Figure 1 (cartoon, rainbow, N blue to C red):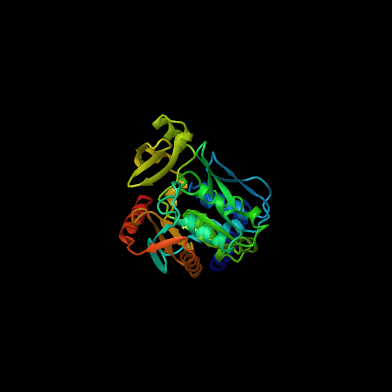
Figure 2 (figure 1 turned 90 degrees about the vertical axis):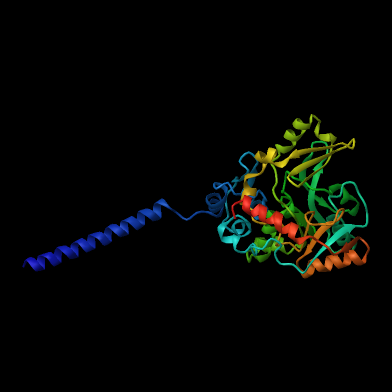
Length: 364
């Protein structure tokens, strides 16, 4: 009888444990409900302080759910989420997307690497003016309806996204901008009225558009199909809007006195309108680097059609990395139409060196 009783008690205990497990699972389901897409972004990106600030999640959202908070350096929810999940597909900092951003090599995939310069000279050009020349070719040949680039308020030295429809305005947007990568902000409005655009952005923007191109989400695809040419810029790091007040304080000049800024060789070089040249060591302004830049492992904008930068170039020229058949086609048209001249001799090892330094600094 005791053996039977023990078996019965064991059976009851087993049933009791099973029941408790079921209750535990139910409680867990109640405590941890499924996250909405923007909540997934918040948990995996925003609260970890790795947001790139590229605005891709804002730009792709059909419901206007998100808006960027400059004080928090990340988006925030402002209206109800429709759960389309497009924002998750395009965020370059979502862990699930990182594997789709490209290979670990510094240069990434390419078909050719060349020194390039515009045949038109301008004091606003950064290095050889290759980006402006390529965009000019695209617009003159009616390959695109407009170019989406970063413009600049030259009085306040503040960058902003600009849609350029006229070739004559391209030169006004030439030169590097170090304090903003918001070029995707107007894209939803732009694509309503055009068929094809050329877009210029830093690696985080390029990654976002590259993810758009790979997505099967209907809202992501709608935007991606409008980007005919994606031009990427070499980028080591970007700065917050507080950089300009700090620079003007150090130099004791108002913002409008600044003509151009250029970062290289561990120095920020500031060219003034009166011809003067000032420099600030980059380590001294490292506190103004955007937090999300420290999560970036891409120096050469590897998901672009064409990448452009100054590192490794012949003096007075830009390095142009042609990555896709579309990029090669645009380059050949620009060359054949006389917008650019090109030659060999790019110092690839210099690009590799700076790219590896970025990886090491960011802990990759």
